[in-house]
Each structure stands twice: as C-alpha cells, then as structure tokens.
Length: 487
Image (cartoon, rainbow, N blue to C red; front, side, top):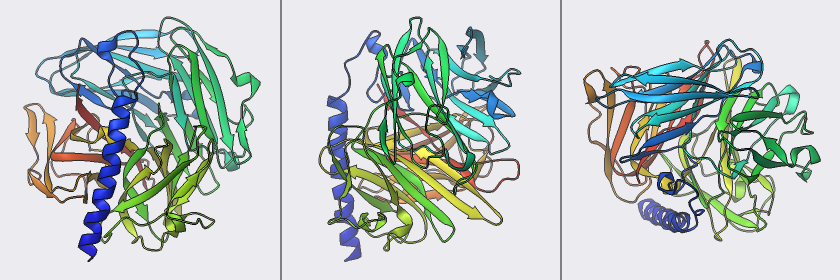
C-alpha cells in the first residue's frame, strides 16, 4: 500500500510540475535587444549549451565593508582551448576592466576586492563563446560562501526571506551593467505589511554602477521578516542580497542573486529535520492574487508527500496552505508529524495557477555553536540531465551532493571531473542507479581535485550541494549546481 501511495503522490507532483513548465515556456517576457542571446528562465543560474558569440555572468558581489578576508570569481574552462573573458568590477565609482585568459581544462580564481575595505564591488564577466562558467566565492570569518552567478538581467527581482534581528544586517545591492542609466523602485514587506519608502522610489542607477541599500538604514531594523521586491521601471538590472546573521536563532553569512520572477513550482534537495534543527520554507506572494500551495517531501523513509497543514503555527482547514496577496508565510517543517528526521528533498507547488517565490532557511545547533544556511529554490523548468559545478567539490561538506530524480522513471547518474586530461569519470560513480522520485546524497568523492565537476543523468534531476564554512566552523552552506540546457 505504501508503494502505491508513493507512486500516486509522485505522479501528482510530476503532473503539477509539467503544468508549470508549460506556463513558464509560454509566459516569459518578450525578448528585448539581442533576442538570440535570451533564454527562458534566463535570469536563474544556468549554463546554456550550443554555439554563442559570448556569454555574460552577473555575480552577487562582495561587501568589503563587512570585513571579508577575501572575495574572488572562479572561471571554469572544460574545453581543449583557452577561453578569453573580460572581468568588470562595478561599484559606486568608476568601473574597472580586466582581460582574463583561462587555460584549457583548467579553472582560474581572480581576486575582486583588490585591497578595498569599504563599499561593495560587483563582478560582471563576459566570456567569448559559451563554454566557460563562473561562480563567486567569499572568504569570511563568519563562514565562507559560494554563490552562483546568472547570465541575464531582469526588470524584476524578489527576495522572500530577510532578517535584521538582534544586530543582524542585510544589504540589497542593485547593479546596472549597461551603458545607460536605470530607474528602480524598491518596496519591502514585514510582519506589519508592505512599505514603500519615498527614498526607495525612483532610485537612479548610473551606467555600469552598483548601489548598496542597508535594510536597517531604510527603516527595516530589528525585523525577523523582510521580503523585498525590486522593480526597474527603466532598463534592466541585477539585484542581490548580503546577510550577516548575529542572533535571533541565526548565525553565519549569506550572499545570493535574487529571484527574477515568481513561479508555480520550486525544488529543494538539501533539506533536514532533527532535534537541533530549525527548517523553514519562506513563501512570498508578490502578486495581487491569493495563492494556495502544498509541499511534498522525498527521501529515505518517506513513502508519500507529507501535508503542510501541521507545519503552520495556526491550523488551516485543508492540506492547502494559503498565501495572501502581498503576504509572507513561514512553513516550519519541524512541525510535520509524518516527516522522518534526517535529510530530505522538497517540492513546493501552487494549486491554483498562482505564482510565488520560495526560499529555504535551515539553522542547526551542533556542539556549542550553530549555523544558518539558506538557498533559493530550483524551478521545474530547469530540471536537467546535465549539471556543472564550476568551483568543484573540494570544499564540499558531508553529503556534499544531493541528487533528486524528479520523474517517475528509474534512471542512472555519472559523476565526472575536469582535469589536465579532460573530462574523466570518477571511479565507482558511473551509471549509478537512481530510483524514481528518489534522493541520493553523496560525500565528496575520493580522488576529486579542485577542478570543475560534471554530473550527467539518464533522467531529469535537480541538484544542490553543501559546502564547508571553513575556519573550523561547524555546519555547511547550501548552493545549487548549475543546470545545462539546450538553447
């Protein structure tokens, strides 16, 4: 009976996901400018295969004023020839540019702070061709951070979670990489409702510049809930968030690019519950229409998707969770009675055709300390049979790689690494079985070097990874792998 229930639950989730994929493909904005360079869901982290004249990478940036020990962009080149790139560093002053050459079958780490101790610097990379990929890495006493970069700008950006309680800080960084000015409006939602401060309306971003907004300074001080909406009324930009958690049940550092659009389906593969764990799915509904959703869980000991009605602080009349228009809801997975303790994957799906933004926040106490890891979800439209990790797995934590089969069909996966001799399959990780709707978690494979890692599968999957925080700190960070899509 449990097997039957699992199959039925899986098919329902896959059917919901398929519907969302159709919506995503039909509902994207009309291409503007260099139309051939735009792809569906292009504002999300991804690599697009095929011939391209050039590929842009927009990274979240580094706040030198936060006391970082180092910040860099990592270039990965899996090809047999060197690639050429331009690295531009944007700030509130004049932009600087540097030509970069990345040797074949190699990776290159380039410093972006360059002695700065104040302000924010945002790296923008232009690679000739479409082969190379880029990630950003920060070295910080509060925990090292690996962040993804994106290949398209957008006129809208969203952040579901925000936090400034007990001295914690949060910045929203607005970046205009183009030669013409952009005009931006910023609003945010706390437990008291939405706010649109006058000083955050009509912000002018000059050409090739970035601007940092302290949420404390703009009126969101000592808040445990801050959802942010960024809208460019003129031009397109990139918006990112930098958070330093110092209390209120959170500890650590996080940097990420925002989410360019609300969607109906979000996947997460590095979930965890336990006696010392607080796990939340933060759902922001930026639309003027009420949303309904549910959450299904995947992993060892989970035979069907658990309902989310018990996850809310207040009871709800059905399995559907209501997200009011413009509202934010925190779903606490700790309170789901049928969910086994341990690691799991999750999919959040809306039920009424609505679209939301979802983030995953996990805090865990280990020994005498604790940590907080957070990540954006992966849209169903980015489920892929090939994934890349530009910065490799050398800094991976325990259960460094979590692979979830999003289909009802059994499959296999193979893990390869780029080295001096090219792409080499890792021992004992070739055509490994991957059951239907199943989750596989792996430690850092033996023999893996600091080069790029590639995962190929026979079925569409979603992949996230856990990274060490360094400096002898407990815990891990969470960041997705990079899906490869055919343009």
